[in-house]
Image (cartoon, rainbow, N blue to C red; front, side, top):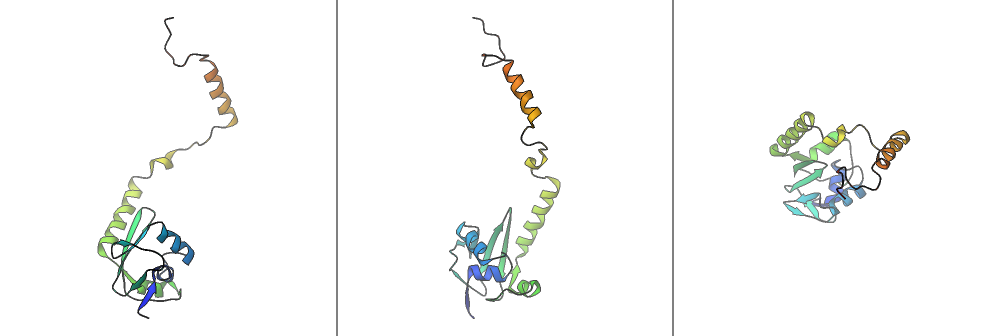
Length: 138
């Protein structure tokens, strides 16, 4: 086997759980082969460089082998070799997430409760027809 569809290779290398999911991610532009965006039917061969964006992390791997079947994880890991730059970037991203979490995750409350909604409505009614807190000089 000299060439294999990129969606099938990503599935066999266990980057995605299903071929359908791999195809969708490729269509969204999250996968590049040799620096170019590709379509799911694009063929990869040994020696190609594949960049896969999974969330905030971009993994760049060198294709070492081809397989049309999805096997166990140790076998799948033999199909590629991650570049040292990619490993370093992933480690830095992990450190950044550890020390500086996403600000939106610190929000503890979401929608107001029924009681909170009533308090907000009561506060709004207190303003009457005025559009601001300033006193009109009319």
